[in-house]
Image 1 (cartoon, rainbow, N blue to C red):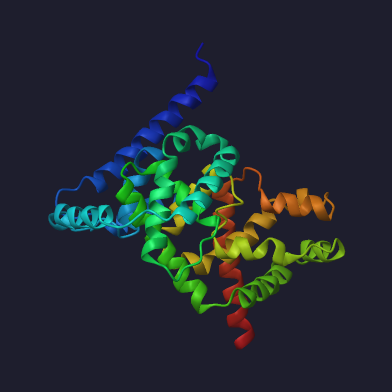
Image 2 (cartoon, rainbow, N blue to C red):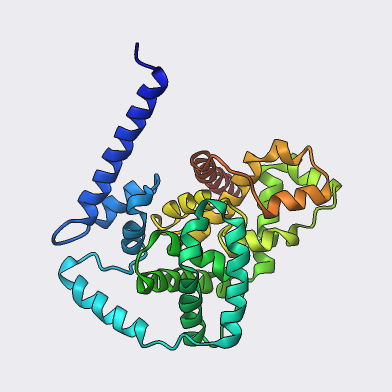
Length: 301
């Protein structure tokens, strides 16, 4: 008699193979990449085998028009290799942070141990091209997913700089103190009992919410969970607008655990989140946003 467990594994393998084929059919199109189809598919998650290629198109690093691709990539590669990457102070700081990052990201540690120099080159190049930007250790965490799933260093650089441009534009437009205050208002409206518990335990929201909101949970989420979240973020037009609701959904997901902890334990958990059901978290985030928008419309009538 066939083991039901093996049947489930076979079915899961077949479904994954079918999903990979769907992505490859889009990505390997001869003339034009159908970005609408790619976004629709990627929003539900991208298999690791094709994640790097999918992200490059989703972020606009690779052009959808394949007739221009070779010319565009050659120009970008030439540009990257001509960027000065040496920056002794920055490289030293990146190297130390990558070492700490490797110890924390156990699932991806093997990949990072062989490519530690890519972090130094990519972040060094970025800092040399953006001398008005102040280096932050979080840059390593924002760069890590690209190092993990993209083969070529120049592509890692352009994906990283694209993400940084998105974050910089939003962070420069919206003051972080104002964003934390708005998030606190949402927190109180959506999960009032947990918000009250945090106040009772004197949990300082600035100790964790600033990082959560500014850097897309890059430091706090487990590595696989982060990449799954970014699959959705790179597939929608307003990822930064959705992000506070994702943060709320994370809190909702771990609410029972948090309510069993004291102040210092809560802080530790919020700064290093456990593995989460990201499908549930992402769906909850969309639901939260819909509920809040409906409430705002209702209140304005």
